[in-house]
Image (cartoon, rainbow, N blue to C red):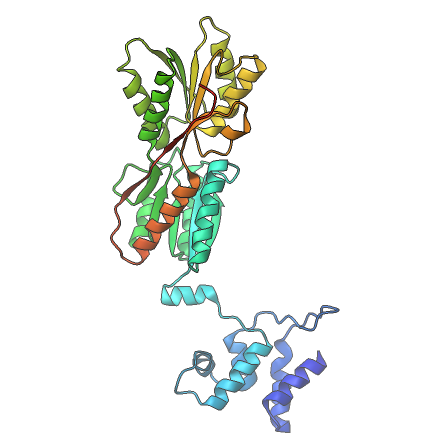
Length: 369
């Protein structure tokens, strides 16, 4: 420590009286030596502490670091050399609050333990990084109270913008209105509100219509439709399209069940396939539901496509793991992430961008029908 402090002092002045003052000023430095490494960690290095060491005002230190023309080259060099030696870093939060300029986005997803959101997250984070932004990721666990607390945290940190996936029970959007008042843009994705806001989602109705038409083309007459939480927008949209298509088919019967996870999907499928007649096809509105349905079929030794058929709406990661592969309509988390970031950047740069944005679904045929 003594060697390092002496080196800094000799670097700054040749006057013995000034050296004594500097030794007293440098008492605030806390040194942590790491054996085998040639550096020292200086804790809480601030403009004030640099000003105390150099005997200059905080304003002068700040302007010197910003290369202000009013500061002499000699003073700038002295300030920069000490700042580099002490590993000084500007307080990012203070700068953000002062300039209202941040390069950090906030993201809220229900859970990272989900293939669709994993794909979305990977795509979004990649585009953020390539464009000079960082991403804070928080999980809501589909809890409206957790959602509110995360929004408050993002508000307090003045993030540049927020990507939000609504929790099923979220009814009060006042917290989002506060963000709008603070000019913090919000892009809703996947589970979106009915309000006039910027949002990006998969074309849920079109995806369902494609899937149901595939079942009809395969000659299915007794279809079991498995849907998720009935409170969320994606369930409402997919259910609406499912009923719309099948209501026009007088010779096709169907049953609708709501399941919130793979376990409930398994139990529901087991119940229906224990009946006579059993369904001749299953429509699954998500990957999670599909895994529960497939477990029931495999346990009951019901082969597909011989004894029944199955189709799912999926991001494509799970259907290919089965044999025969499951026919699915792709709702790409990767494409959703790309479009969501594009929408955010347009808002930040005040570029024209439509409010309601849809990602087109695609059909991938396997051997399950």
